[in-house]
Amino acid sequence: MLENLERVDAAMPWFFPVWVFLLGACVGSFLNVCIYRIPYAQSVVRPGSHCGCGAPIRWFDNIPVLSWLLLLGRARCCGRRFSVRYPVIELLTAALFAGSWLMHSPGVAIAGMVFLSLLIGAAFIDLDHMIIPDGFSMGGSVAGVVLSFLVPALHLAEWQQVGWFPVDSLRSGLHGISGALIGSGLLLWIGLLAEKMLRREAMGFGDVKLMGAIGAFCGWQGAIFAIFGGAVFGCVLYAIGLIWRGIFGNRTNGEGASGEAPEAGEAGAKVDGTTSRPAAFDGEAEAAPGEIPFGPSLAIGAALYFVWAHGWVDPYFRMLTAELATF
Ligand SMILES: [Zn+2]
Image 1 (tube, rainbow, N blue to C red):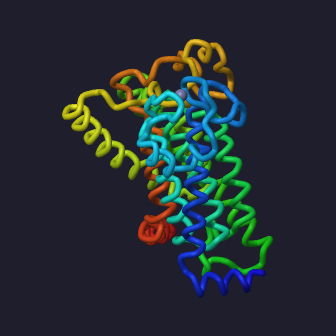
Image 2 (tube, rainbow, N blue to C red):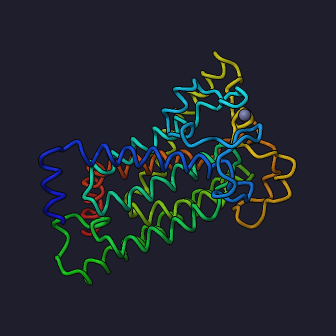
Image 3 (cartoon, rainbow, N blue to C red):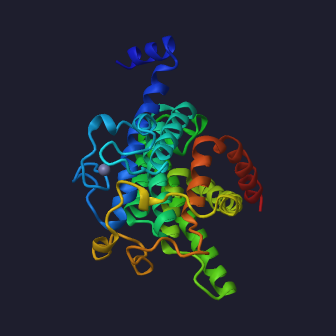
C-alpha cells in the first residue's frame, strides 16, 4: 500500500500536492461557514449553505473558488454580491495545505493542516468580532498536545529521534506541552506589562489561549517567532490597511454583503459561553474603530513559521540555547 503510494509519488510528483491543494480548497469552503456562523453560536452543518435571500445554494454553485469565478461573485438566485473573501479564504487554505505538504513529511503535514485550519478560522473571526472562540484556541491547544504525542516528527528532527516510538512520542509530547505553556505564558506577561504601562486593557485572553495552540503545534521556538514576527507583520499589514482605506475609502464589502451572514438581531441573543470575550461582543457591531485584533498577526506569524520559516529560524534558537547552557 505505502509502496504503491510512493511509486505514484515518484512517477507523478504533482499528484499528491494537487490533491492536497483541492482538499485545502474544500476545507477553506467549510472554514468560510465556520467563520460566519460560529460567532453566532449557529450550527456549521445545518442548514446547508444558503443565500442571504433564503434560497439554498445548489452544489454546482458551491464549488470552491470556481463557482465564485463563474458567477462573477453574484448569487444565481437573486444576484446579490458574495464577498471576495470567500474565494480568498479558499485559495489561502489550499495554498497553505499544499505548502505544508511540500515542506513536511506526511504525518507532520496532516497535523499541520489541522493547525492551519484552526489558525485561519481564529484569525478571520478575530478580525470580524475581536473574539477567538475557545474551540479554536483551547481546542487547538488540546489538539496540538495530542498530535505532538502521536506525531513525534512534529517537534523532533530526524536526527533528534531515537527511532523508538514511546521515547520519541513522550519527548515530542513534552515539547508540545512546554510550547503551549511558554507561548501562552509569554504573551500573558507581555499583555500584563503593556496593561500596566498603557493603563488600559492591552490584550485579550483569546490571544493568550491561541498562543497555547501555536506553542503546542510549533514548540516554544515557533511561539516566540509568532509573537515577535507576528507583531512586525501586524504593523506592516496595519499600515497597508490604512493606505488602502485612504485610497479606496471604507467600502470593502464585508460580511454584510455576503450570503452566509446571519441576521444580526436574532443572533445577538444567541451568543453564549463558547466565545472567549462575550462581554466585548454585542452581536452586531464589528470591531470597534481604532482597535486592532492581535489574533490575525499571531496567526500569520505562526503559519509562516510552520510552513516555511522554521528551517532558518530554528538554528538561531539552537545557538541561543547552546549559549544559555554554558552558564
Ligand atoms: Zn439569493
